[in-house]
Image (cartoon, rainbow, N blue to C red; front, side):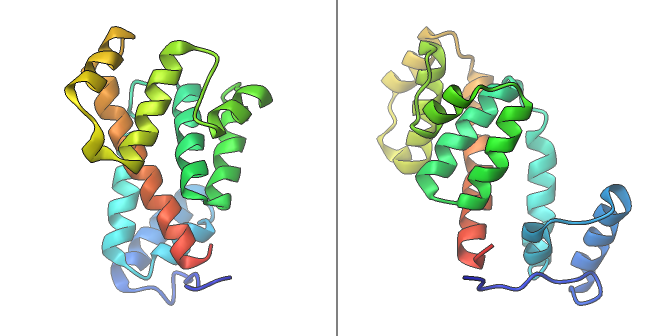
Length: 168
C-alpha cells in the first residue's frame, strides 16, 4: 500500500526540484523511488551522491548484484528484488545463481564468504569479529572489497527500507 506519494518536479521542494530537473535532463524521467524521495531534499541528494559513488566499487558487477539480491531478500523489498534480478540478468547471472544469491549462497566458496558477510553486515554487524575479517582475507578478499561490501549493503538498506516505508 502506498504511504508516501511521488512528487513531480513542480511539487517538490526547491532543492529536490533542482535534482529532479537534472535527472530528467539526463535520463528523460525519474523513477518512482526517486520522485518519492523528493519529499526530503537531504535524503534525495544523499542517495544520489551515494549511489553514484557506489558505482565505482571494484567488485565485479555480477557479484555486486548477487550481494544486493541477498540483502534485499533479507529486507523483503519486492521492488528492489525485481530491480536487482533484472540487473543481475543484464550482468550475465544465470537464473540458478540468482536463486542461490537470494538464499545468500553461491556455488563459488569465495562468493559464499562475501555474500554471507554482507548479510551479516546488515543483520548483525556487532557480531562480526577479527576472525570474520581474516576469513574473508583467506578467501583473497582485500580490505577494499570488504569496505565496498559495507557500502553496498548500506545503499541497499537505504533503498529497501525507503521503499518499504513509502510503500513503493
